[in-house]
Image (tube, helix red, strand yellow):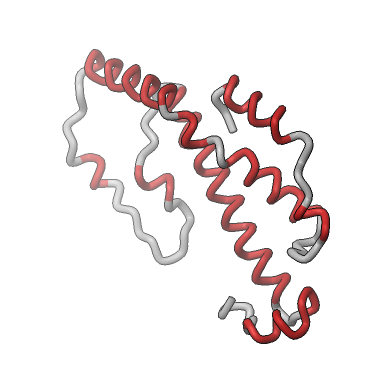
Length: 145
């Protein structure tokens, strides 16, 4: 809010017409969408048997420096050990996939927010999405959100 010069008082006084409100909402929504994309990619990497890696989470982020040598300090395990780790990661994701389910309504809401030109006072954002049960079932069944 401070980056966009948005003041709480202006939101109360002017509502959707508050100066800087759409910019602030856009920044927060973009950041949330980026987090969802990153989480999807990390989940996909784990499901494919790869390693997520800590640097992936902060890739391209301003003010964060990732040192690739941090990962090199760990000795490379044998292929049998890495296969076991990969299978274990897949099983853990399978067991805990319910943790990712709140991302389904979040993604749907962010899509509606984008369609509404980032106006958080739009009436459409307060309505239930009739597609949610279907999307949630499909996400759980496919193990992708």
